Every structure is written in structure tokens, then in C-alpha cells.
Image (cartoon, rainbow, N blue to C red; front, side):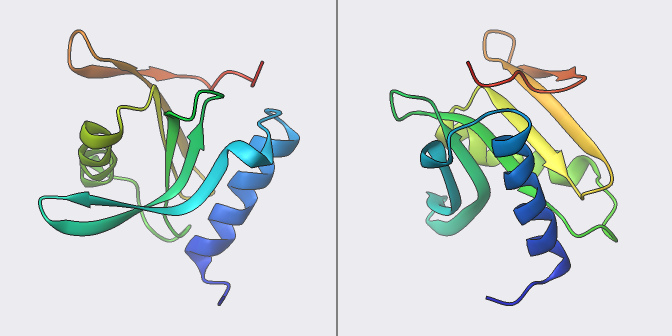
Length: 117
């Protein structure tokens, strides 16, 4: 695997989830494939809960890529299928954490995601 700038961000964010937020490595999947509108897509990082359902989707961009509304639209499309509780977008320099509000069909920005309990 080539260490692209995006891959560098992904590997560091996985370490953050494991080392600082205490998520078990066994619940973390990289490049999990899903099909949206008959097109194959991949999540950068998908964290499952202990029941095996998606809990967190992380979209990683290279540090040179500015995070825009399009980035949030991309991860929101993934979440229409996955129904995760948290969405994270990062370019390694900026991190945006959101908690889904399914009842109102929106997301709430957070300072950080909760630690794994």
C-alpha cells in the first residue's frame, strides 16, 4: 500500500481512535465497501458497536484538501445506508465531529466524539 497523504491521515486517525479514545481495534474497519445507487463506494474508516452495527463513519481527506459542504454531503450519503450515530470528517489538520439527529434528519456538531466505554 502506498502511503498517500490521505492514507497518512487515515492511519493517524485510527491510532487516535485506539490510543486516545480507547476504541478496540477489533471494531474498526478500513475501506469497507457499500453500494449506493448501484455504485460501489468505500468508507475510509467505519467503527462498529459491540452489536456489529455501524457507530462511526470517518471520511479522511489529504491535508491539502479543504473540507467543504461536498465532503459532508458525501459522508451523509454513506450514512443514509449505514445509519451510524456519529460522522467525522478530517484532513488531519481540521476535524469535524457530528452526532446524528435522525428524528430531525440533521446532525449536531460536537467538540469531540465520546470515548469508547
